[in-house]
Length: 539
Image 1: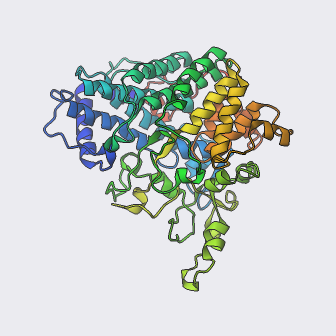
Image 2: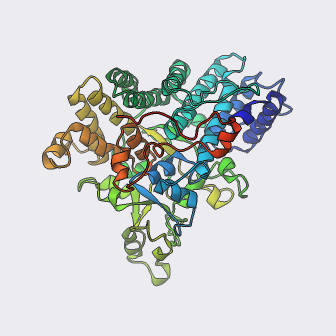
């Protein structure tokens, strides 16, 4: 992919321009809606603000790529102890089943899918960043592209381990792409975000909601620095640096915690006051054919996989294909007071059938044919945060235009990351507790003045919580369950072998901490890209 993608300047730039025209013409929601650019060639493109904006939209586009195995949300949940693959049986989506069971290899479709979308995004971001055009508008576009380039590299780094850093769009035939040292990749990502922050907008108008803001870059930088600190022997100075950026987001008046956790994932709750960075989706793309579905669908296609299987739908949601199934290990993990978060992560039989049918005529009652599920994975729950809500306008094929922006960074994540920095950097435990308590006050107790915070949890459950850090790990799991953070949290904190090893004994953790680089990509590099990185695990 890398070598083939970058080696021929004229061919690649011409193909890219065609792609920009198609994207500009087809996107239909919010800031993705832009006028087509006519008669553009490699010689006259990137010469106006309008052309640069179209190029920027093309750089955003790969964020939406990926089906059930190629999006960070289902990938991280299935890979973790939160959820299992599901579907109709062990032979349904075997590549995803392999991810779940830690028996995947370099010919698994996810090995290519996650890699391809990120390096396509990097290539397109580089076209924007490397343009010679300068203007006030273009400088903002380039800053957004630097954020995207940082995100795409970060997503590769946390999924595959140390990876190639790519800053150009053309390379000589002799170019050898290799895994850079982790420190090199980290510093590249960090420097991109630091360069972007001063140039990014504090907020966008209604037509541009969803574009990257200064707070998004500050939050991502804080997250990247925490990962760096984790892998660098719990470096306190790096945790402290992360805290400086995260504090800016906490102090930003544009954002506020919800007092009704359930509303965070309700219909039309995208880009709310807790939204820092979301991957934008639309139900109105008009796409109805299944060609190149993982790369051309602007709706949340993987959400279609995750609706309740064997369910006819009701007046609120549609049924789906039954993947991404919450497990008892997750559902039993919630404390008794954690009702709002627990009921927001999974549909139950009672909700969908028993309670729904109360007062309904016999003709209006529904059944849920749970025998259609993979019985090894189904334990009575269907994922809920990315539901197939009916209350949207759909244009095109229903399955290809599902709602649900991926919530990549929410404000509560920033609160909990900042709390972690105050526990693992220069210790300020009182501040860490106050940040955790603020999340619990709002998301567990609906903003009530009286609530059980960190001290109460430690006192009430001494066998479960010995320290504030134990409470933090609990909060991170239940707060973001079903959102794609769990596996990455386990890996970066060094807990993956112990937590997942208890469920899947015998896994070779020198390999399966990371995804292998796909066999095709290894071949394209002439063998210079290794299947797995050669580095020790954190901690």
